[in-house]
Image 1 (tube, helix red, strand yellow):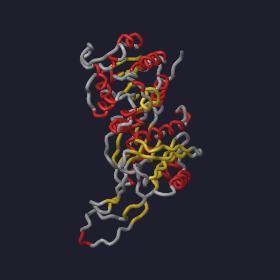
Image 2 (cartoon, helix red, strand yellow):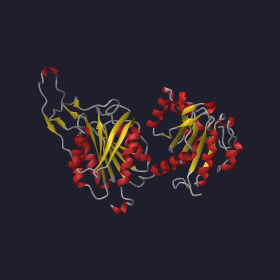
Image 3 (cartoon, helix red, strand yellow):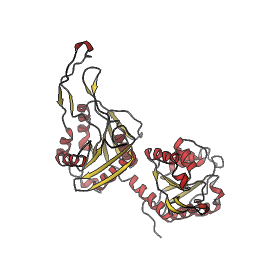
Image 4 (tube, one colour):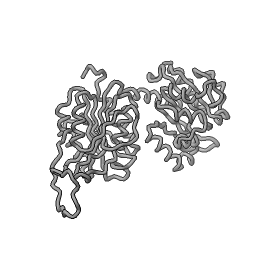
Length: 406
């Protein structure tokens, strides 16, 4: 039986932790092998209380591993993590999720999760009360923010005769999600993506600036997600945050500096995502010294900055995708659509920064992605990495299948 196309030839670490739903992992393993994947099962000691090692060793591509100490290799978790194309954990118990979120390496599976840069797919399974506990949900939110993917559990019959939310997703759905994840992970390979991040800092004098509340978190999430999907990423940013080693970071401060760096690279870019909050105004002729308090400065004369997003729109070549952001507090969609048309963008991300938990300084965001083709996608409040994923999905759909089509 032919399997999902994203799995053929891929090295998949199948993690199984200790819950009653571990029996379903046998079917996950079989389906992965049938789809052409090379499957390496890693079971926690508790998982072996529910399912047998022999079963997985018979079905998988390699024998089961259960311990850091039982392998002939001195550091098995490092080899597994480095060579994996993806890791899927089914079921992922509350304990496994908590250890992973806290960075606790308490066994071979958690050590492998911490030692990989491959995509990770968690498939939680537990009783409803545990699934709904704030600690579990907080841990999943943290992991999602770090780029971990989650297949939400379903509702239905649970162990002990109970029923409710927390039932492990069906094996066919888990395998399909992993296939889609791997296909998405490579959809920007060979592309060059420019992302801007943070609020620009316009000098008042030698020590003071006018700026805004942008933290750069959304721009950094976009850069990380694009790099994870195979792109060459150039991040032009006014703030410094942790980011993938694969991302080239160029530090700037002012709108003019950001303009110079972006415009110098724009011709070579397949995608330009202007997530930065670029100042609309700057102080006119700021002195190169500090203005003293006793000088009794009564006003600061402002002048508009140059809107180089307009230049990018006018100079956009066929096949290039240009994305803008609209941080608004009122008439959000109308203002965003006006900007989309006026600046000749392909996509604009409308962001109501007055909404609770969304916009500047938050780890979460809530946006509407609007396309020049009339498309509209609502992204409810979620981690900024999830927003980045939705934006880049929309970008990937608009890129030519082959670069020579540009």
